[in-house]
Amino acid sequence: MNDCETPFGPLPRSVVNDVLKELSVFDCHTHLFPPSFCSLSLSGLDNLLTYHYLVAEFLGYESCSPQQFFSFPQQQQAKLIYDKLFLENLPISEAARGLITTLHCLELDLEPSYQLMMESFSAQYASDRSKYFRKIFSLAHVASVVMTNDPFDSQELAYWSELDRIEDSFIPSMRLDGIFQSGTCSFSCGGKTFSVDFDNNSSLLRYLEHCIAILHPSYLAVSAPSARALLESPRFSQVVLQLAKDSRLPVFLLLGVHRAISSNLQNAGDGISLASVDGLEAICQQHPDVRFFASLLASRNQTDLTVLARVFPHLRPAGCWWYLNQPETVKAITAERFNLLGFQFIPQFSDARVVEQLLYKWAHTRSVLADVLARKLTVSAQELAPVSREALQGQLRSFLLENPKRWLGEIHER
Ligand code: RAT
Ligand code: ZN
Image (cartoon, rainbow, N blue to C red; front, side):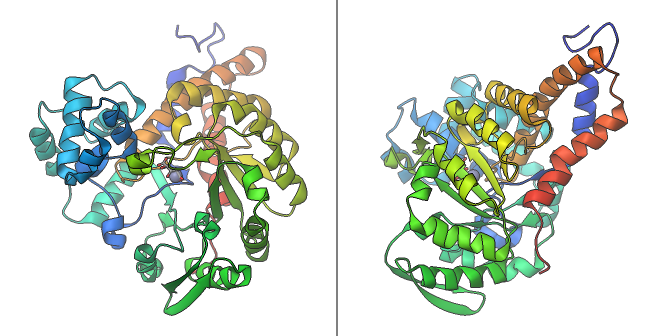
């Protein structure tokens, strides 16, 4: 008997696991783009190996300086990481285990050299990228993903003309971190050019309203060190919240990131900023007419976020973000959310940057969810009635697919 079974024989972990394995999920936060976004749309072994989570780990071995490392071409960076993290050491970190899971999902094994690994990886690569992406989505049981679209990135804006043609499996969202800069800059979007004065909220609003009309985002998002930092900036209420109210869009708050604390590590150099959640409490109190979703990066903030979501139904916790995405941490956070919120939260998003990462991120999430759910449901089965497979399927379908899609994936007609 495993530790989820009881003499009453209710719900062994394997049943929960089977149900979870078959269910498609809705991934409400990624950095993926469809193949039509060309070089912004990442796939393949070199991109997997140079994921910034693995770069930071590799640089910890101090076999070369960050400056040297970033001066190498990507293929050389990938080989260095492969040799150090997968051949010289056992892959034990979450991101390194992630590559192993990814390979297994593709029916590949770790090879004894980077060259051989590249050969076997390339052999399973389809020449038609759209077809390859569809294969990955289907192997990962991911129905659709939300992109992170930046209205202040000119390279990305050039691809927004493709939006009408992209598949429904890529849903836009608008990331507004860029509004906090200063100065003036020109952006061309949807055939119109705007000179945006970042110090003038009307100028920002004019441009962003146009972007919303072109992009049709499912939600607005902003990341910041703390909710207090957002509250202290009039641009948050006068631009982000104003747009949310006018366009009836939810706002996804990604809080607790201290950007570029070690800037020579590039995008691997961000840290955590621990903040009290009183700022988030104030935002929820002051804006009952906006729907908020929040991810807080510091593990010590998690109970506070869950309790806030209990008392403010227009706030929901979403996922275990970035440094929190490690199995033991996700398990503890998810168990607490079940304890206090039932199913009223979004358990996870992948944050994938390279399409094949969907395979490992969701496989690991499913495994943790199976552990937590089997334990929780077994307790109630002992005391109440056994849970049927059908009831479990229905509940988990809304938990992983229908609710997140309804909350953060609905877009206006294009
Ligand atoms: O987890 C990550 O990949 C980070 O670099 C961030 O992109 C983070 O997820 C974010 O959305 O800001
Ligand atoms: Zn992200």
